[in-house]
Length: 97
Image (cartoon, rainbow, N blue to C red; front, side):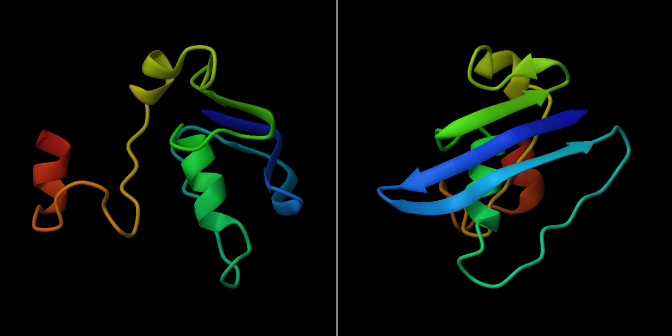
């Protein structure tokens, strides 16, 4: 289960993510829809622990992503649209890596 509570992200005075809250239960699939600049990638990066949040809380299987990031990250997998490592690797290769 992933729980997002009052998640917020500022870049200077610009609010990229505005106090969002939701829960993803086990065996659920969630999709983010919205125009460019809506905060979808920023939200995913905060959930995955790649980007610090300005406010709020993310818990993954009961573990807070900021208080216990290693344990929380063991329960998720996230491959962004533009992979940050090796562009020639396939999804299965990333999982093995």
